Image (cartoon, rainbow, N blue to C red; front, top):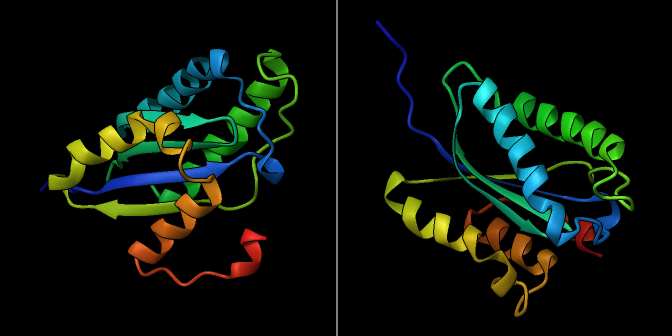
Length: 148
């Protein structure tokens, strides 16, 4: 018998110290790189987007893929690539940790639209407040010190 799995994830991680180092014009290079990692891991990517200090990934994981290992691979590989490519000269790396939230497949269209419109959302709300709201909405315990 085959393994079947339907897990829709929103994965979010920030630049080191939340510094605004992801230059808008070059972000598609980063997104394409991340997309390639996900493809190589047999994950299905629905959308990648972000702003100058963080990235959102909407994807489904292959049943054999560990979320923690996938995010570690994405962050370490993309960090090395970004530092060597020169596309983001101020980029120092990714902040420790990440947020990962699961959604019903019925929420996919709205979730993709939300991530697609990150620039507009962040004209009204900071990245810290966005993450805090995600943690609360998904009933995740968190330490407020990480938001100082």
